[in-house]
Length: 165
Image 1: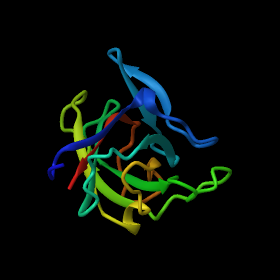
Image 2: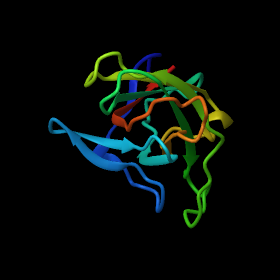
Image 3: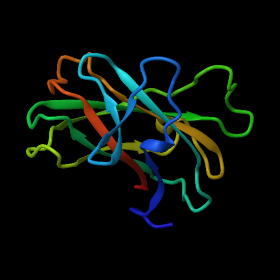
Image 4: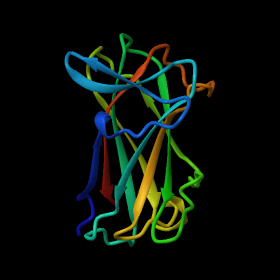
């Protein structure tokens, strides 16, 4: 596998929402999106298996494709965390997400446009040591409670892409 190649893609319909403070399904001109409120930290969780072609040497970059609901200014903070389920690695009766990596991204300058934020993870503990062929969960949270999140509207998640770094 080469650096920059896509490993996994998630869309709004792939979300397996947490039991509370979850992003809600919505549409924008028939595009299915997940709405993340401006005033409350909300999350979406995606589950998959790390593809066999992942080299597992340098890490990954998570690309968050998102838009803003009716505004063109302000910053949105995205937190991303991995949970390795693997083979006997995680008791699925509880959560075990690794520490978050974050990105602050500016709202698109035109209402309705999509912007792409990216968050990098080094191979190993930074991505909860997810290995080739192991199941995992990826948690995306809007850190709306952070004073640096200044976008006064819903953030609309369109898609998430994981690429080999």
